[in-house]
Image (cartoon, rainbow, N blue to C red; front, side, top):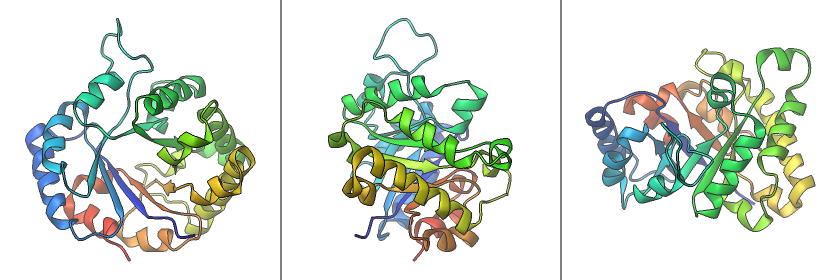
Length: 250
């Protein structure tokens, strides 16, 4: 089967509301004839602004994270109910910056995944190894553990609303990119993990994005690989000039 390509822009902690609005408006024009699936994930403070601009277009509204609890005394957190109220459709969970900078473990990520799905949000679940783990020959093991634990308790009926994003931590924001062959090998391995967990049909349908210094210059090469089904783009998603060529590849 042919899986749809899914190109997502993670704006991280960048852009004021006016800057986010300007980029969103440009993208709605430049991507309107695009044939792939698109998403932008601005900061929490810009979700409402960007959501109003992309509503009714072919660009989905994503959030970069959410709390593991529905509501309550959790100072500084943002709940799934608040995200839904803003029109958020997708939430990115388990990003390496959340795992390594903010010490979110697999159990916490899993709790968030199940909460998001329970409330009808789609999920982009990020996995990926550190450079030290890759050099120790542990890349596959790390990605398998993060996939298994991240999806623990998620029924096959919900799996269609989960996208995996393989982001080798050593390639995020460093300018280093896994070669298309290296990336495809991990994607193929992770697809095998999904097959063992959920069966061949589910594995065949699973969209697995690549993230980690994706640029216009390498996007087409990466997407040409059999098991790479899109991109989770960081730095290059912050300007239309660098994001649009990735989003419109092919």
